[in-house]
View 1 (cartoon, rainbow, N blue to C red):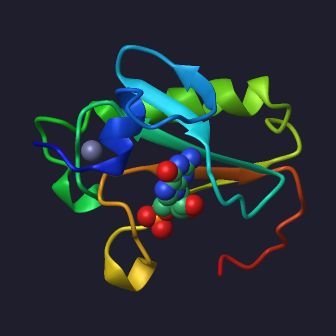
View 2 (view 1 turned 90 degrees about the vertical axis):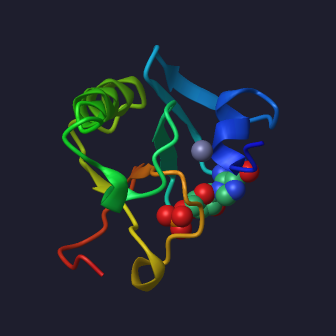
Length: 114
Ligand code: 5GP
Ligand code: ZN
């Protein structure tokens, strides 16, 4: 049995506001947005964190990054700019252990990373 909340979102067992989908990737609005645009991009395959990427599954990164570009264009932030953020593990504040990329934009975030 899979108790992963993002697997349940991908399987539509938990509702979400869809932004983009293809056979490998699903993207939806973050439930607690920290920017005017805050989208989560997840592989449909369960990968717990960035630490779990291997030569066997790393091809998914191509799909994730291409999805970022599609979504940024779709939501009108491709030209104004955006950040993509992956939190890996405790120090980064990862709370959901199904790897995901935050796509945030729609406001000026300045020059500092943190
Ligand atoms: P993390 O801290 O693991 O990088 O980020 C997890 C993100 O998932 C958080 O920004 C949180 O708001 C979001 N999140 C957690 N549960 C849900 C949910 O059920 N639905 C949606 N749409 N986002 C969620
Ligand atoms: Zn999962």
